[in-house]
Each structure stands twice: as structure tokens, then as C-alpha cells.
Image 1: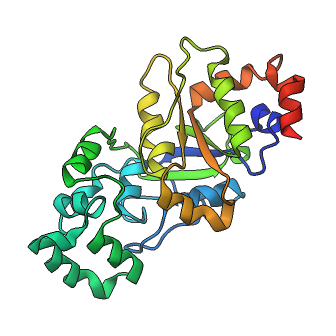
Image 2: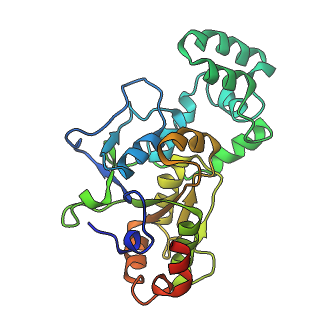
Image 3: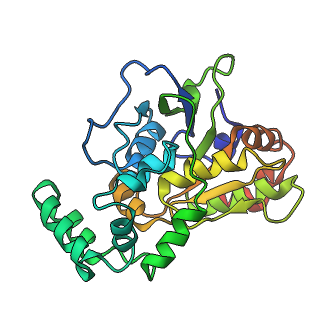
Length: 270
């Protein structure tokens, strides 16, 4: 499947299709069972041409399991949801249970990960705010065994329908896609920027948008941890822009005759 948008904005990598499947693609990159990893590594690999997959035992981290649609994995976080609420905020050094869990898991964790468990990532101010964050997430339990991330060029449009299509874009390209998403839309707010993990912005948020009459695109990679994890592979000036497949097809049809062929965009593209 070829993208007119990717060509018009001179996308440096391939668009990434996220699909649900009960079949594991041959040769797909995967995390080992029980081993930590960032789902966005798999997405970045797909953007560079390598198909990847994960299931309910190989999603890399608890946020990643939530992000791609394997239900509420935060209940399985070490020490349970309360420890996660402190992990994302003030840290687990502030209460007795958290300190005890930290000692139990220390031999099994990287030093930096253990420090974050103890001292907290501090992305939200309080555990109560983290609880609100998790309650507002569009947690999804997908009906298939695997989530597959593959280059859009390898999608067979006759037999496969992506759940989302993600572009990894520069600031200029992000601006162009935002304009294109609003080009023929029922409102001026056709792109959302949720506070979410990188994987949640390409997974469960587009899943939710697919249920709307007029799905919105989702800007991502505002997740600082994901940005650090992808810094080496994709660089510093990259954001994600994800669309439901229905919105992607609509935007594809609007490329011809749009601003993407006019001098302002062509000058920026150069």
C-alpha cells in the first residue's frame, strides 16, 4: 500500500500500520516473554521496514500492554495500582509498602528503572492525579491475539485493514498533517494531543477515535520517556501523527489539489 501523503511531505521513514491479528507474521520482531522493552522501539523498527508483533505476554512494559490494547495492565504493576500511581508521581519511597516492594524487585531491575520506581517519574503531581489519568484512559481489550506493527507498504489492502496508521514526522510535517486533517473536516479541532504514553497515542486513542462519526487524528511522542527511547533511532525532532484507517483514507484523497502542491508548503519542504 502506497501513501500519497508520505510522498507529498517527503516522509523520511515508512508509515506504520498497526493491525490486530490472530496470526504471527513470519520473522516478526518480538520482545522475549517477561523482558522489559518499549513498544515504540517496535514502531520505530516498522518505520524502518521491519515488521514487529506483541501479544499479552510480550508487550514489553505495563504501559505498553495498556497502549496497544491488552486491557488494564496497571493492575499487574509491581505492588499493584497504588505503586504505579506513586511511580508516575512522587515515588514509592514515601510509604512502607512501596519501600518493601522496591527491595523485593531491586535484584531484577535496571538501576535507572529501580530509581524511577523509588523516586518517581514525576510526570504527574500526585498519586490521585495518576489515578484520574488511568481512569480516563480509553483502556481496550482487543479481540485478537497479536498486535502487529508493519510498514504500510507491506499491507495487503485486499485482506488487511489497519487499526491505525502512524507517521513519524518533523515539526514542519506535523504542521502539514494537522492542516490536512482539518482541510475537509466538520470542525477546527480535528487533531488531539492527549497526555499519554507514546504507544497509547498510536494504539488505544486511535481505537477510541474509530468509534466516532468523525475520528480525529492523534499527535503523540509528547511522552518524554518515549522520546528518550527513540532518540537514537529516530532523532530529536520527531513526533507521531496517528490516524484511524478511515481518516487516513479520507486524508489521502485530499492530497491532490490541496496546499501540498502550493508554494508555501513546497518552500518549507525544501
